[in-house]
Image 1 (cartoon, rainbow, N blue to C red):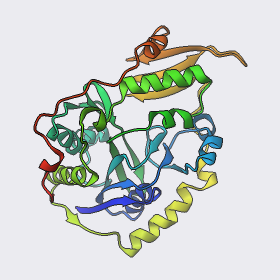
Image 2: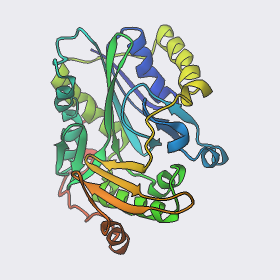
Image 3: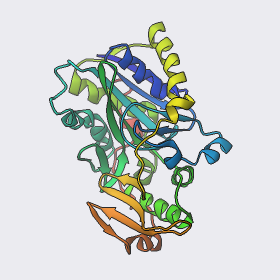
Image 4: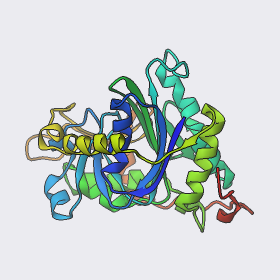
Length: 314
């Protein structure tokens, strides 16, 4: 399989290169991270319902809509992305494509475990450490291919993520931040010295080679670069960003697999009840509790697993 270890690249390139592979009908693995921050919508998100566009414009946060599922995400250099593109006729794709997550996420799970973190798969597509989500993942049909995309959080700006989303009011925003801090975690929460992008890329590449076979290292060729540039105009264009998405009468934001913050029952000009829904059960009293005991996840002693313990090459 072709492997593009792109390291730090322009924000739009982190999404456009895997789209370009898919539209060209070319299989491959990409590992990269953005050198600048941006906001990325999922295929079915509604821009006006989800995003505070004035805030993003005022703070220079560019927008892009990808062709895979999942919700709105804030992305920056404190994350590393791994993106796998397979043709639809590839025998590695099971009839139930959801099942491929089990293989696709193994390299990231093993990379976290290398550092002593108790990483686990939470079906269908979350990786958790200590019960908290540290990796968000999605998939989608693009051209004649299927793209599986994921990330690992080295660190995360919870305040900025909560600010760029359109929410009913300050109480919702405060509860949203508290809920994110309870149910999300990063490598920086667990390790005094998190691994570098290079070390994580090396570990991920080794894991993908073990799961999918030998990797053929390549650089983007002219055809791939031209297609990525063409897709940049489309995926960041006003008409594509403004496509109508799924709208709900209630404001509902996914925090992690099975966990949502919801506002229900608000009349015009009035705030509704804030509910934290977990496993299909909503608890109105849980939101004040979140604010009362908001705290960082417990630190984790990774023993003698040091960042410099990873091999230099995959």
